[in-house]
Image (tube, rainbow, N blue to C red):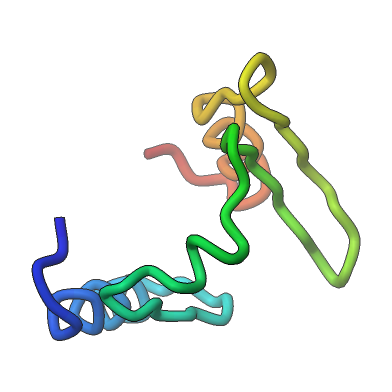
Length: 79
């Protein structure tokens, strides 16, 4: 629960340090980007080389556990 922009920057840095290899965008504390581009109900997508390879549209197909299983299959890692 970020209280200020430094908290958000620290979270982004942590994601980079643990090996996240996708572009990160840090929203302002006013959440302008979330308001303008947010999707409700929430949906999950994985985009690889410009192609959607995983899609779970909310609210009925929104399942973070399926996303985890999909990503584990891609990386061969268990979490």
